[in-house]
Amino acid sequence: MYTASYIIIYIMIFVFGVFIGSFLNVCIYRIPKEETIVKGSSHCMTCGEKIKKRDLIPVLSWCLLRGKCRNCGVEISPRYTVVELLNGILFLVAFLKYDFMFNPIMGVLVCLLYSALVVVFFMDWDTQLISTGVVMFIGILGLVQLLSNLLLKGPISDITWKSQLIGIFVVSIPLLLIHLLSKGRALGLGDVYLMAAGGFFLGVKSVLVAMFIGMIVGSVVGMILKYKTGNSKFAFGPYLSIGISIAALYGNQLADLYLRFSGFIR
Image 1 (tube, rainbow, N blue to C red):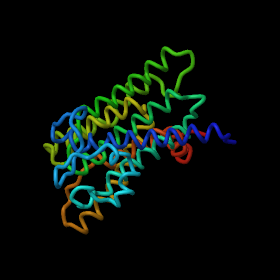
Image 2: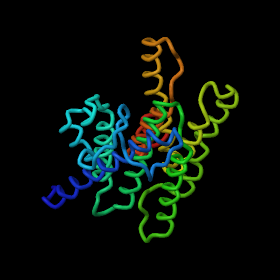
Image 3: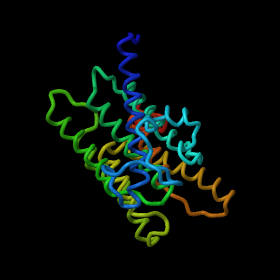
Image 4: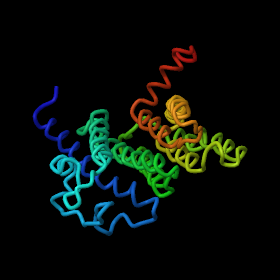
């Protein structure tokens, strides 16, 4: 049963995630343009006017301005608010899964993983490019998890270091072969790197679940897009990101459920 203090903590986690989501919007827009994400002020994409600090409050400012620029009145894409809310919700989900009081380290790592995946999702959707820097960040999260499991008195997850190391290759190597055989037409190296880093964080069983989910979702959405547009080419990273997100919470359970259903384990 959640006490008032628990509720306040989770509200704060959600709000913090929303503010981080505002920064993610900067990353999604600037990284493909090779612009700095730590300097430079936010401005209207239409009139170029610098956005005042009072109009930079995530979600709230967009609502108060009714989704329009204060200076020129042009509509501001609601996607900025969607990214902010999505990141806040993902932060909340992560800490509900990994209890704040009992496993805060894993909760923080999954939150950071989710933020990186939000960037991957929208950046790849827009540009069909996956940032190597963001993928490396996911790899660093996997390294922190590995070291925490080895060095702390109690492990923060049930994923062994062997599972993490094998997870790097179990999906990425087949994807690399597909990339090489298709000469990059089937999928890009960014997808390979993403699943290598994701496998390092998730371990063997969960990364296989992530890949399966990504393939199913990607196939369904791909068929719908091809039916509507006639174009069979689409970014695969967003769907891999969805798979990794789900597997980060329930990967091992889903893998064990499949193995029991298949009769491999009891």
